[in-house]
Image 1: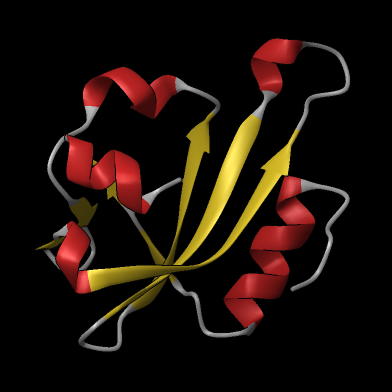
Image 2: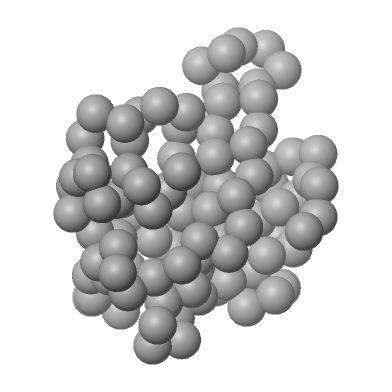
Length: 97
């Protein structure tokens, strides 16, 4: 697993490795709007996770997840630190630890 200096560097590299879809976090699943599908916790794996801290503000912190589904869909989820903690199911919370 690479160590990246910036979020954009990580996104570009992981997209080059086939993580081409964008995932959105929903309370019970991940959504891929371009494919119009939802992927539940039991149907995906977190392959890599990278944390980034903003230089100017702690509000700029983010986490990048490289995710692959059981049916071969690979994509990225970008989330701010702690935002997901209150808004998702326990199964999603465990999966994204």
